[in-house]
Length: 213
Length: 249
Image (cartoon, rainbow over all chains, first blue to last red; front, side, top):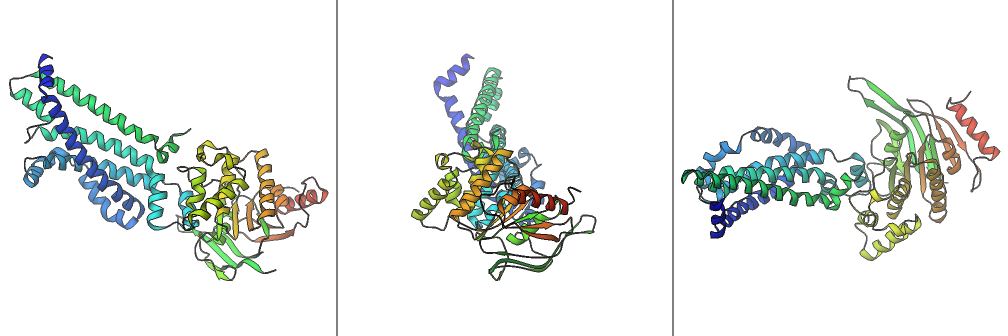
């Protein structure tokens, strides 16, 4: 406990938290930027779905941990490796959630759009995406949870900052289990905070209507 | 009168999962004049909705032709708007945005004035910023109607539009529809199983048979508005239509 306070006072704790959050932010937003457009395209155009779905379903069950050796081989021991692992692991729940969201868009909205001559990008952006948004946001919540899960695992290997590193380093530097448990608690609290932030997305107009009873 | 909508010897069947075919429409012909109000009345499951889909261009007939002012109907478009019982106003945008959104290609100034006009016309001027889930069933159907009218369609296709409303709201919607038609008449094709509704609204009633669908009888209502369904002519008409439909002896 005293050790944790000492770490906090020295600014080391903040440094580790910031390092982990930065990696999550970059990897996660990268995954959002890739997964949502791809999921919309796969959900809407059956040929794209048929071509890419088998690949996605094959890659999805491979644990992010299994990718660590390849990540180090490709991206070295800097920030790029954990960011890649975060991007990879949070990508799948978001792409699957987006596809499911697009597939479950009610037919009457698609028909109405067709009737009013709304086509192309406007149809996707202003009808399909808002109609699918509740499930897209659910995928984003799961994705962020996975990202936070993976950053800790990724930092335990080949990196010297972040909460994952703090856990491994505390054990290696003389079995400081007080610091190990403190880091675990911090991870849990931050994960909870991140989910609370994500739940604010449920208040946007294109999500809220799904939850009104 | 010039025919606005014309269907000639239309056939339509659906492929079933077990490889069989289900004939839905068997050689149906009809025409609807400009600004005429036609009601299609038939037993449930007789293919009324399929017929409306064909007329509005959402489906294609297996054979036969469907034309709209002389042009073959290839696909749905803003010239003929379909309104259904399910409702299709976009729930993620406000009442106002629902109207302006479908006027995408109209200049900003006209878009605003048209949206305002049709919101007023259906009596929803105080609910411009409301979301669809904040509106009652009757208000939702009025918004649906306003959104259809705002693109100035030449035809309104209505598939049991008031079917999900309570009896009182249904009667009010009939009056609203008639009032709006007096101000801005459109050609209207209404599908309903409510014979009272057909008699209260339509110029002509097409009485449809069980599947595969054909027209059993075309009835000229020939009564002035406002009509009362308690009028002896309406009562006689109703019982003869119900008799055709096999609902009464």
